[in-house]
Length: 403
Image (cartoon, rainbow, N blue to C red; front, side):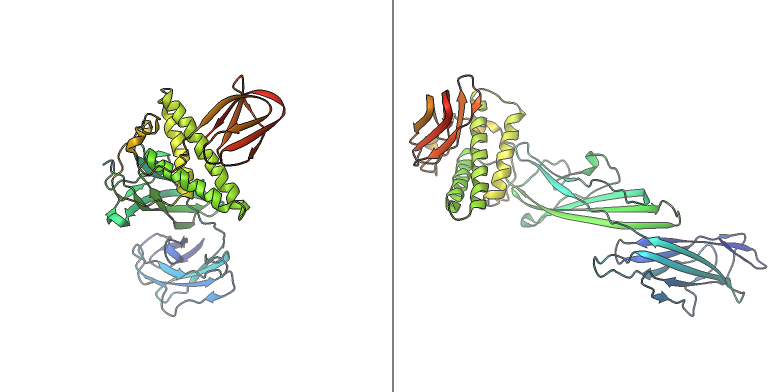
């Protein structure tokens, strides 16, 4: 620390550096000297040598001037690196010349090696269309920056539904708990209104960090992340059939033309079909716990990425997974595919080769269990849309399930 003295009193010259990254990256220099008595006609000039060697020379007039206790700050726009557009890292040298009136100036010099990695905010959607409850979560792993202590965090969520000209509530908090990181996609918080629509959600996190070695250096930044969220009403059983049939058509369309897509859609189709069969069996058995909803959410997650859907922009109502039980009057349902994905075939078989004439008119998913109910595996060959052969390494007895 340097000292300036005149007939009025003594000044212990000091200043702080703020790397303000919230808008145009700026270096803000603030006088923090201690004054034994008020000084007037203070005159401060500042020379900055950047990491790239370019020098910002002092102004002929004062860079900071006035009366102690009411001195302004000095701002300098930081140079940006060509590779990432962030402030140039490296050593900044600040030569801070302080005087009062025509007295001889005293220079206090500081150097600081600026190294700072900006925070990357991550957001994920958490959708439960059954309740319904739609949320976006801030899943940023850490707000800690190497070499700095975190002084404060302020998080602000905003959102809108452009198709409905709706602006969602604004949520601001400074906590880091799980609850503080969650944002409900409601127009008015807790009004229970969620829509089959496209949401736009942004999270702006303002942080203030102080350098661990130099308390006179702070960094402020705003890290922003925006995501879009497609929320849909829970599909009816008839709609689910259509989606499954569309997925099956994708499998068939890429058979022999694109192995990568064929394998992907085949795996997805097998997953949703076996999962839905499992769900219907649970419902028919009277199982009504949360696992039913989890199964449907997993199915919908696959369909969401594979099958285009159109938003209705209508409010989503609470729905029970019981709508997928087999106790449905199919005569009242229109638009069912010719070969229903829900058709199944079950039969007891024995031997090392099982030839199954299922008459389902499709390539069904095949599951085989032994007499004890344990899953067993064989080579499955689809000889036609209505016949499949399962070959084992030895003779076995059990049942085959096809859907």
